[in-house]
Image (cartoon, rainbow, N blue to C red):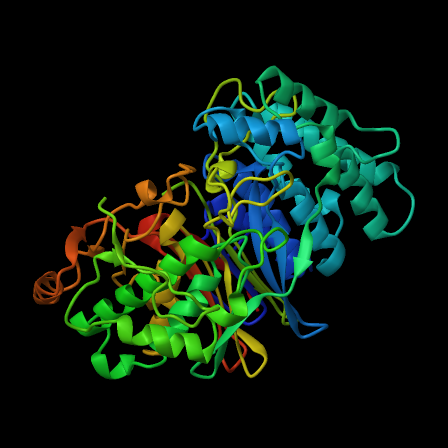
Length: 538
């Protein structure tokens, strides 16, 4: 791809590749790779640019969970780019009494994107803030939105701070970050602007919340599946339920069933239903609650749960299990009758570093946008709830259990796949489609992202904070499936009790990157969903 040509939806390269949302954001990451940056540098540049090209789906005031394979340590780490609830106990008491509102700034967590990107640069990158933010500033300077010059001015304050600071690259980056979050010993103008905006709009966030925010670096949750190691962020995301679904599916010969056959679609959907029931019952910020993840992934618990999949009948019940007491069903099955804005980013470089990230915000589209700092806000506190005793109940400084869920996959300790999907509760369902497209049927990214997908709404709504959790259940027995799947297959599934809804449009919005045995990178994004990819020449 030349500097002037727009990226397409697929790319192959021996030296570096990426796939993401907006074309100009992909160009930003590609430029950083061309300039000698690594995957961490390119990911940070792409994520910042996505906050302009894909604004509405993500925002500087939003969140970005990120997984990275570090070539130096040969390890995968999870970076928690997720803002937290206000620290104020009075604010939490207000939420518990009044609920988490759907349309004002009280639904916004602490902005996490700046700290996530700069932490990634400090720990894994090679470049400074000034260099990786240049493509985003160019986009903002060209832009016509009224918030563009205000956000550009905010980012240039961070550039200024990097230039004023003496010391190492890492110290300069940290100083820029500290200016945004009000941790600088003298210059905290950005944090002051943000606090004024929160107060003006009636929000609870304050400078103390900004100053306390840190991007934690954690071990991923992993599961082995047919010789592959699948890595997910912890239970502050929904990601581990993909691991649970894979454990259930190990007991079935998926390849023999045939790709997108009625049996294949049925067993995947039934495994998803069981795994999501456990998600809804147990998952929450592991810094606040003891999630029994080891037990949920154990062989003993999986053996108990797997027979709940009836190959002839679609379940109409939500059936969480009890991994501690080793019971297949925690209580009687409950019949519960009856996605937000996100974007995508995957990057790999010539040195063996690989990143998968899922930027988001569900931006509240109000005007004027973002106050003096130009930092708009999202709704992610609505992924908490106000159910006393629930693992995902709001608390001071707590992370919501979000749907954002990037994926890295290793084989024999080396990265082979990076996947990122937009689509709320559909994200890991689409990831499961893509993952098995490749592992079971050998499809490369360009085919995997275009193959017909399917999903279910047989789960609680992750964006409904209603304390009566059973009232958030969306649609029992539902099956959304591409109309490109043959009619005979759809009729067979309906005969098993699935509430089949054929979809003409894409189901969720994926990008995927594969590292072939010869070292070539193959990146692709679903063109129907407006995804883009680019690779370095040579």
